[in-house]
Amino acid sequence: MSSLPQSVSTDTPVTRSHYDVAIVGGGVVGSALACALRNSGLQVILLDAQSREAAVSRQQVYAVTLLTGQILQGIGVWEAILPQINTFRQIRLSDGDRPGDVRFVPQDLALERLGYVAEHTPLLKTLREYLDKSNNVCCLESAQVQQIDYGAKVATVTYQHQDQEQQVTANLVVAADGGRSPLREAAGISTRGWKYWQSCVTFKVKPEKSHENIAYEKFQASGPFAILPLPGNRCNVVWTAPHDEAQALMELDEAEFRERLQQRFGQEMGRVELASSRYLFPVQLMQSDRYVKPRLALVGDAAHRCHPVGGQGMNLGIRDVAALAEVLQSAQERGQDIGTLTVLKRYERWRKLENLTILGFTDVLDRLFSNNWWPLVLLRQLGLWGLRHLPPVKTTALRLMTGLLGRQPQLARD
Image 1 (tube, rainbow, N blue to C red):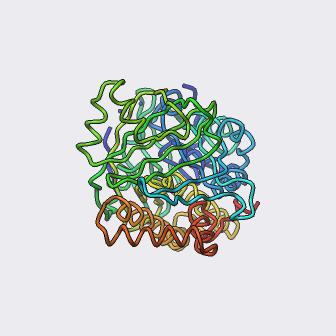
Image 2: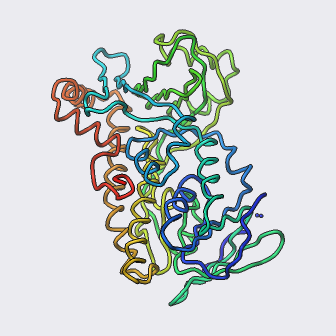
Image 3: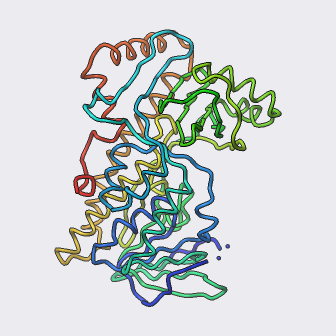
């Protein structure tokens, strides 16, 4: 028995007492999994603690890799999402004020683009609207899961909704409830990792000149400074700095902050004006010791978290979704119990090592560039030289960043 902390639109009425899959957490990753299972033959319930209005109103911005775009296209939502987000066709990587930046272009992969930038609201709103048309998915909002009993045959999910305690059973519970996952903690799954010495200040700006659909990663000794091009000639900035410095940036008045920002932003796009409030969040690396237990699977931030450098976090969650959906559908077609360890271990073996690779990549990237220790300065200058002058090195790095390196799920090939 797992007891969970207690909080509770428009819902799909609960018409069943038993579902094949119960997804707890209705963010981008949880909703994408429900969408991926829409035509699977499995009966799915999505339990979200927030109302839809609250869920879609978050101010997050995501770098979206080419692989994530392919997965969302395989799910069937990409054509509705694409007009609402921005496509970038160049990435510029620089090391402080040192000359010789690295420029990635689509021709490096014989493609037409390198990635996308999506705001949270249109992304999640489109996923939820897709679920509204699903006959096999029940979306229940403002539903606070209180307890889960994992039995030999089914898991029993107890939740609070409209001031009433209710229950459903499911063959499998999927925890998509974020980095502090109550389900993971209640199931006794431990994690490994560390908190960084850095925090991120994130906000949107409106530059004087066109951003020309270029994404920037400007490394400084204090931390990465990322600029992602948004629709409407806006940009999202993620300014990473040591905790005290990041807090000081938050406390500056708007005029002082804008001057500090202009110095770090550079003159490529002329003067920049703030187009949103500033938000602060700490940075953490985390990997769960296991992704599965009988009747339980973790996806997205519930399973792992990485440094935001390179914008990989949400994309790892979408890759989890594609892998788990493929494993579950395959097991369903074979008549296997989808909640058994025999089935769920296939998902864990697929995703755990791939995620660890990206976690390690982002950790090394941040540590390598976030300092002025001369041996590492020489090492990273050598690495940047290799990216500029050795095409196989550049292509491999770009394939890793775009998600095209590694096992490709069926959804990305459909």
